[in-house]
Amino acid sequence: MRRWIVLLLTIIIFLGSGCSNKIELNRLGIISAIAYDLDESNQWELTFQIIIPKLSQGKSGGGSQSPVTVFSSKGKTLLEAIQKSELEAPRHLFFSHTQVIIISKRVAKYGVDQILDANLRSYESRENTNVLISDGDAKRVLEVLTPLENIPGNTISNLLSGKGNRQSELAPSKLHEFIFAITTPSVSAALLEIKVMGEPEEQKSLDALQETRSPAVLKLDRFGVFKQDKFVGWLNRKESRGIPWITNRLKRTTIVFSCEGESRHGQQSSFLVEESHTKLIPNISDGNLFMSVEIEAEGNLIETTCNLDLKKSKTLRKLEKHIQKQIRNNVEDSFQAVKKMKADTLGFGEKFHKSYPQAWKKLSKNWDNEFAKIKLDVNVEVKIRQTGMIDDSFSKISGKQK
Image (cartoon, rainbow, N blue to C red):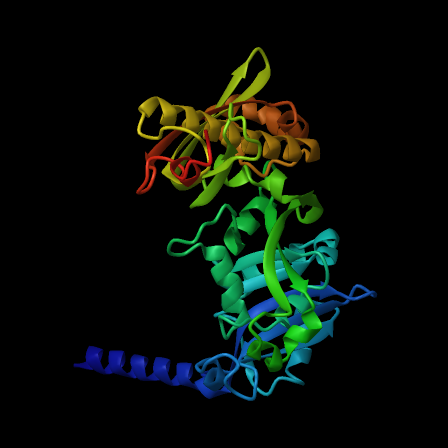
């Protein structure tokens, strides 16, 4: 009996102490996105996008007030900036629902170790938060209202997720992945760029949501490459297309290829990749480093103007070779771009480490230069599953091609 009394008292004390620190839900300022900037004196400027619960449930543009509010605060440290924000925010800032972190290029050049340190220490930090980079002020991204999603932070998260049947040739970075890349000497991190296209000042007002065409939109673009915790350069869209292929993170994408041998110029076809798998096979021979990239992809032919008989299997094999060539070019373009930067964003170092642990002890001491010496061999196998409801292009059926 005494043991039950002691257990009951322990539970009461525990619950009592827990309730003393609780914060009511209606006193929380739920953050959907955070932007990190540095001002001219290198003071931290943190910008918070906070959800207004009642308004965020309604239709965008249907009310007289924005479903989110955005405000900034400055400090010599991140914690000081957060504490100063409490002088302006009427609610306690709640970070556990943060979906997006945006870092400005100025911050990225300065170094992101302080940001990552603060996130690792905080019990409210989420390891699956999306991390992006902005070429200009990161805070400007959070000020743009979006028409299809009430919460702009949700819009950015959905752009990255590739949910449902959305095509995505992007390789977004989660907070835990970014931390791993930054803290692993042989790995270079890469973050997607988020940018505002159009007139951002006009998209801050609810009036913009009443229009059929938004004056400004959020768009994903380049990749920002890091060495250790600092930004070193950009990869443009062409240079970054092969990264998801190499890293086996591609979900769905469209491959555009030309019809070789056709007399008519400008004929293009589209192949929708619905399934893909990549295997990296490292090899060391006579002191030279080799990496074999083995890619398998399957999908459907979505459109074509090629004057070909798609009922014949040899015709499909010919098209598959064109697709293979395009994928191979994408992979090689990306490899050459990161090779020039001597930045292993592809995870090659980890593969050599696993396959050649003894040789890695020497390679790891100067991996940036060793990575730039790797010779790449790309092998691609493509299978066209379906060609749709017609066997010939419409141009051929209509008699426009001869």
